[in-house]
Length: 223
Image 1: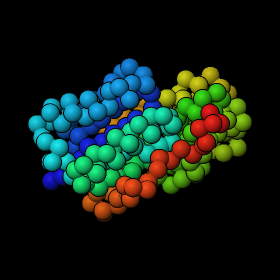
Image 2 (image 1 turned 90 degrees about the horizontal axis):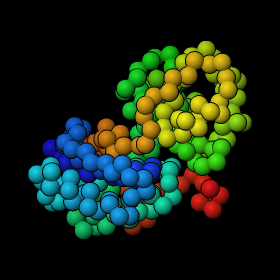
Image 3 (image 1 turned 45 degrees about the vertical axis):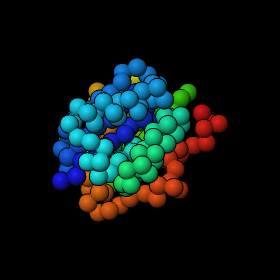
Image 4 (image 1 turned 45 degrees about the horizontal axis):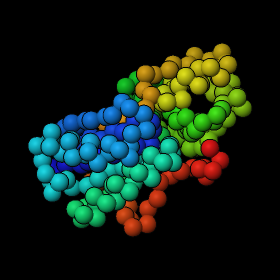
């Protein structure tokens, strides 16, 4: 039964978790914003000790690969790669928006709903995707300027479920008559990676540690 270490640094908070198979063992998150560089390695050491395992017990590392914070993704991936090299274990990528989508459907299952995870991309922009209850993609992952999104043309009368750290921005900018449900899921959590990471581990869907890069979606100079 494998232990997996999960690293989430794509949002403002730093989050690490350990799972056994697809079950959460422990979670640590630093509520201080943008503390990734200062806290990530110490959080990992702390959670390994709390879980009463050693680094050699870890079978793989999963990483929330973006889109999200450019700096956070760089720090997180560098740490993940270093551990994979040192421990000679595989690296698993889980797309940040897809992980959040899974969590939204898990927490708030509505068969008729359209799900819309949102990550703040600064200014008027968000990173998002849109999918139905069965995870069929309606709108692929992309950067959207909220004031240019005409949801009335994209959807029928189904409920739209929105979550992510762009929640407040969305509530202030989207002006439509649709029935929108805003979930209290803001910053991405490493716990959202567990189900997808375990599935990829069983299927041996691993990254090339030397060459893989985060999914930035946009050039950081445009942020």
